[in-house]
Length: 349
Ligand code: SAH
Image 1 (cartoon, rainbow, N blue to C red):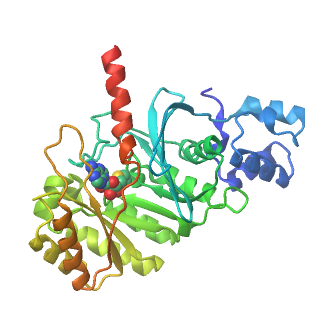
Image 2: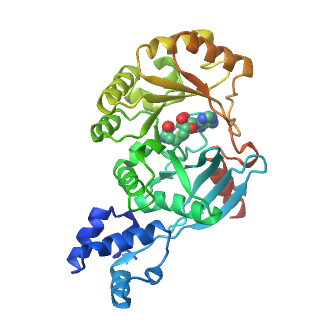
Image 3: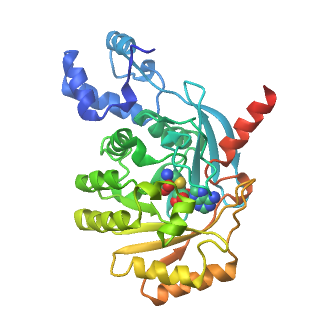
């Protein structure tokens, strides 16, 4: 398959150029793009295209088709978690969540992650690769097909660092938001980053209307250095100004993720330092009770400490919410299912 091109990774403009080279009219690219948005897995299914052209397309291009390696459905809230297997045997996780206003999906952008945040289950030494635009897109298409629903919101918060796979992620965003495809508007998409400053700046210049979530998790470099190795390259004095610029460039307020870790970042002093750090900024703080990861010494904050922290921020005028936790009975937080599958595989070998 090496010599063939991944057609689902192509933006409509690239597809149009490729069809023109084959001597096809412009509407052909639109027809193919629509079929791909419906989740077809072969050119044979594109019934409004001639057999000859289907055969030619099949010789030049391929259509990705992930397998469902595992699927768990929560009995409490309808959350569905998928472990998809990719062409090369890698597995990735996707979580489909049901809200009052529709379905939201949490996508992986890399197989594994090299950022090394100490509280996160996704980190595995060496074992990472970027997902192609098609592999990111497939998570939406196949979850939709499997559950027979339409996704209205996307969060890039699964395994991987989206800005470490910048080009593919931006191509995916352009594909998934295209009016002739799934047409999921940028305002319905959030991208979460651990804080790769140069890439935040590059993204800001595109002026996309998506929500940028920044995984902050600490109000000082001393604490953040311990939790997130990326802070040594891009400390708070670089990250926070980049976030301010992002707002100026896009007009979109930043959402800061803050996982509450008992006795590490949840003290009244931390709340005061955080309020100071974000003062005067157009931002929103999302407090997340830490998901305990097997084997980790880090514990979630108590409910009381979490409330006190939230109140302290609100008092200082900082919009702060606590994230609702879904899928607690199905390992729905990132990396957990994938880790278990990897462990099972190791045990079997
Ligand atoms: N690499 C990106 C996106 C993937 S992680 C990022 O760092 O933002 C998605 C979110 O889950 C991030 O905010 C991350 O810090 C958080 N997270 C990871 N492990 C967690 C855990 N054990 N408990 C709570 N939040 C966690």
